[in-house]
Length: 380
Ligand code: SF4
Image (cartoon, rainbow, N blue to C red; front, side, top):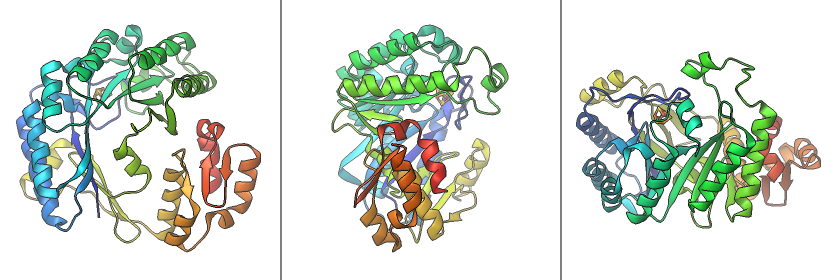
């Protein structure tokens, strides 16, 4: 039913101006209490789905999971192992804000079972970091990466954002170059999106002159592809690059439609049952916490997928990965060949140089990865 676990830590030191994630400032809240609720939610879920396979991956995301002490993380992981079982080679990722870690905490996470660190660096330019409302400097990011190596992490990813206010190509090239020099194992590269309801939406309305336009942001993403692939990274998913063997297995599971259980306010779950069942947890912390205290799972309405929903997901999620979609697996699952159903669309997209189609594989080209929205609309 599910082979992956996502644990959402809903707190941050301060809210960044661009952030629309389910997170709020920690001030005045008790992390022990949150951990106890997360443990209780895990117990409720384990009782609801008792016949599960051992987990292939666990991901502590947020929010800022690195606000937790090493003991709190170790305790959550020990409970996950007891309740669900962990595969021998389980991948356990923790998202860390560079402004919240030191050698002791990183060593503690590693000893507590965390195998992979994802650092929210976002930029190596202090002016950009201040504009984003990040609580750390570029120097703190460099130090965090060095300390993570000293703590024994051999799989460290960083996130970078382009299209930032007043960011030029030179700023962006500098951030990419620093990520490469620091020998980060994995990079997630995003273009800034201005989300409704965030301070950035008020500060930077549509067409704001401080923001690079779409063409400039696209050029930055293209620059990331050429610099990172030249440096030996594999562009394995639209927004993700990895050194050989260092892909995020947890995130690959999302794109391959593996089942996952999400714990914590606003976390999402997907069960492999029938064509699939999806739901999200209540995003409001108090509503979520009250449900768990009353021994109820805090799920919102479930969506049972139809065959057509599931087929669309296979296309939209599968095409995100450079490996693309196996047409024979798809035919086995749905009793229909995608290259027949979409013969004309595929022919036109091939002609435009956006996809490749062999007898067994449908995949985006490099150009298709940069212009993926133009591909996806053809399969709606
Ligand atoms: S640290 Fe991450 S989750 Fe927290 S407010 Fe900033 S962007 Fe959002």
